[in-house]
Amino acid sequence: MRRRWMLAGITVAMLAGSPALGAGPERYEDAIGDSVGDAPDIVAITVSAPDDEPTMRFDVELAPGRLFGTDGETWSDVIFIGMAGNDRTDGRGLLDDGVYITGTHGITLDLQCDTGAMLLTPESLYWYVVDVDTSDDTLSFTLDRKLIDAPPDVYFQVQVGVERDLTGSNESEGEVEGDVYPELGQPPAHYRAGVLVS
Ligand SMILES: [Ca+2]
Image (cartoon, rainbow, N blue to C red):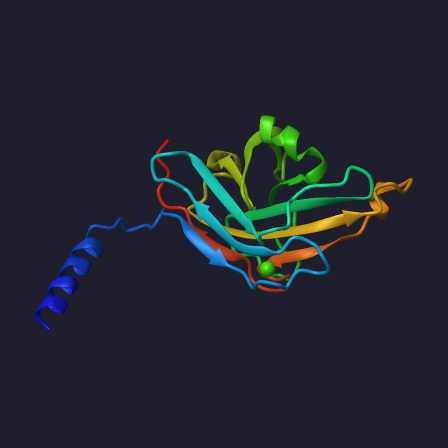
């Protein structure tokens, strides 16, 4: 019993030393096996925004054994991350509501790992401002928080999918199916980014 109390005392001391606004990595787990067909399946998303860096990073972990890519002719994986500084629960969703959106396409993934992905804002489309990286089954996106107005509260939604029929005469006929976190029609996930030191 005495040892248990000692451990409790240590835990309290550690919590008392934590910053008021949590800026550490936050992991959001998604159901496994809920993607459509053989599309990529989101396992978890980890968001981090260090207090002393003007960056925000999304690590999107996909189910193992299903590489994010393309066959170059008939299909390609796609991923989108929608972000906003406030909770938008009007039913339209972050991916369709003109907020900040970034992502990548399996066709251009290698290029974007070398250069960076686009960031679509309500005012502009910025090219090559989001760093993209891959590690095992994780796709990572790092962006400058100032480009999204550095909000302390960030709401986000991630969609991955496979786009088919790319050999058709009109790519807009391509079909996207896959997995979304949080599910469409649900409130977006919430991350508190902490204090930005500029
Ligand atoms: Ca999933």
